[in-house]
Image (tube, rainbow, N blue to C red; front, side):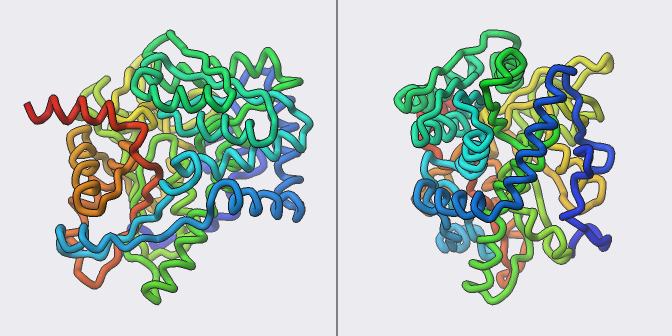
Length: 407
């Protein structure tokens, strides 16, 4: 059974000021308020423009490779016992992850607004390579900010971005991960706002980004509904996705928020364990605060300073969670758990060995949840997992870590 019986009006959010209940908003320097209002107006105009939507649908099909398959993981299902496991294969998209859905929408919006220079931040590199590829496709200048530690972990994606013509700027400040990359991208945008469009890669930050990113990823859930009805004649009993900022998860879940019989589960990064500085599970150790443009759940110390985070996956290694996820957690509509590094690495291995599908380490957190959850469910029940990206980018790092675990 679902965790809530309260009706969810998913289309009423956010409000005109960008709030999801107490979360979200526009907490930015005054110099960015005007550009954000312009961006909001331009996006709302584009959203209601049939020509824009048709062009986006065309690019998603011809360039990105949609629709993606809803895949019955038969051997994994038999291995675990219990629920039938379906994987939404976002890993099969061009550039290797769900990120291309949002990037294509925002690149088309940048062109509509007359911007010729695009900047973005990236953690695992999947948003970065999607942005670089889309900019190459449309002939736009592209600058990607990436933490130096993430550049080490994701060297393959750094090369892929540069191959597509992007300038990749390493960030040496702080932990040298996603938070610092976002800081540098925002500094660039403040300085060059007239000529530059900032493509934020997750469903967080200032309004209108959480709304835009969610909308551009809704295609995931819409396809799942059509596909599962065709394959099984009914909707799933439970759906699970990894949650960093939360873009893949909100796109996967949004279509099903009003189907209260479906359990929706977000899986955060448990890291080395729930000790301060060793994880990125915001709902396990965080509290309400403001970070990089919005009010949401954040890992912070008693003085309000942002805590160090850790995850085996660069894409989940972030101190805040998207505001819409915080809202649905309060409502009891989405439940959140976490998977440790070791559990995610096990998921990485098990899916590879039983299905021949190598997941991204981010997605492996959702697979780790399925390994635990599926055997608890009945054989007639259906568990859908969003496989948000493929693991090519993680092979070197995963091999190193698995070697350490096995010695």
